Length: 215
Image (cartoon, rainbow, N blue to C red; front, side, top):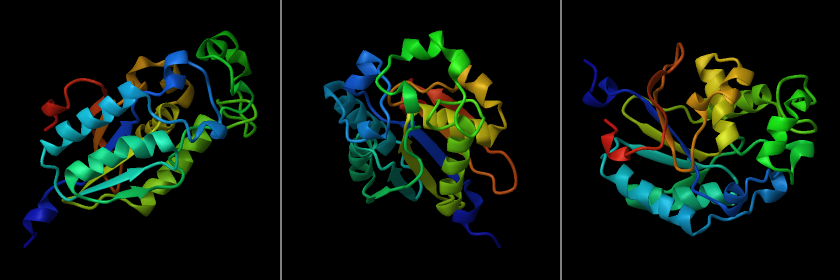
């Protein structure tokens, strides 16, 4: 007979980090921006997330963050609130923006015809493609895959989350990038039911609203 735990779904929460000054100024940074910290609003985002996620009584949580400081600073109060260690997960960091590093977000919109990564897919010239980043992120997920009765929380980054959702939900990366549907505001949450044999079930997508409404 299945145990009570095994009857519970395997849940995956994908979370974008809190606000940074680069988000405010809307400037792309490459890997050299990995140590950029949260700003004051970003730390408030992290505390609010921690408070709201604790109230959900998530079953058997595991908290992961990318190798970038802003993700770890967001994940730390969440891990503390859930009384579990924060773990670092490789390969869920933000995309390398290549030659667009140091340029404004508006530059990408003006020069979208240049958005081809070295692997030939839609992405950043001289940097990562959304296909490549999505495959990288997905491979990281398979290493720590949620089990029935567990909740895996991963604090990551805006473009990285669009990339992995394109992979998981079989959406064309170019279309997902252009769509507001997959765009995560700072501290927004996607909740999925992990499925070992097929695409995940989407409970909420890039939700920046009241986390207290999570079921």
